[in-house]
Image (tube, rainbow, N blue to C red; front, side, top):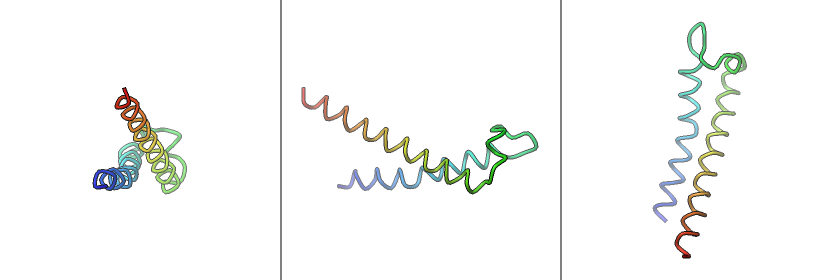
Length: 74
């Protein structure tokens, strides 16, 4: 139960953390590293990146669980 809580809190906090890092460091300056992506609304970009990060992390966690269960059955 504690492990599930830690995984949930990690995913909950790392999604927006990743999105903030990308927006803050990828869209600054005169020539942003992300180019066309940075020309849209920053908040909309932040939300989209947070959702993508959550989806990737949840998918990776589910894949880890599936692989672990498969390996433990043999």
